[in-house]
Length: 189
Image 1 (spheres, rainbow, N blue to C red):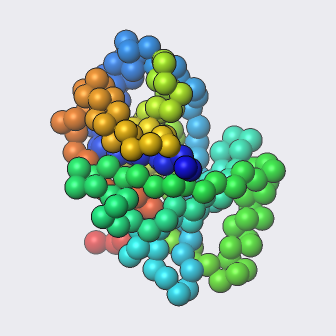
Image 2 (cartoon, rainbow, N blue to C red):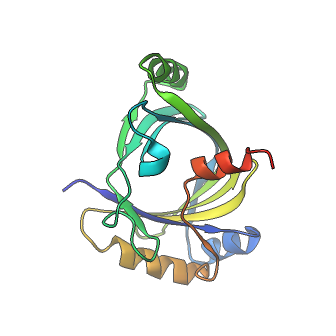
Image 3 (cartoon, rainbow, N blue to C red):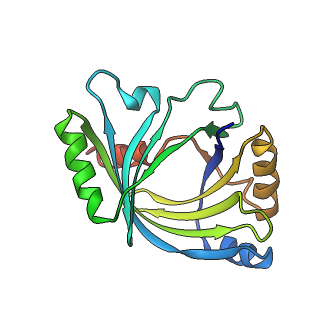
């Protein structure tokens, strides 16, 4: 069975208390990354409507293309936990991101949005399958994204335990992808 990424995103009004809690619980800070994600959709399907993801991600010394399938009742639970098999293709280097963006454009993909964010990534002290990201997304705000990668169906239960331990269960759940939040923020009022 392919690994399934189980995740939930919540608003974060301030990150310092969460960072302190992560340290208290023994999480390892893996680094701070500035990521630029360019999202695409084909002409024949509206990925905004199907909530699919095709993106090129680039950051310091790293680039990849990611595809996440459409959301439906099976992949998006009533508790706003998202569980999807993610397909990633790591590119040879960050300079390949530009080539990937050109390729997708040349084959007729439409650019939906460009998301720039600073991500501080933490790993659980005992579970490599658990990551917590504190994201600051340009023009949108700050968020905490809890992610569990599993090959069985226990990911949602583990995610609930992690969020409870972190004290973030009272934060508003955000169901929209960053791509959609950035698009909404860029529309003039």
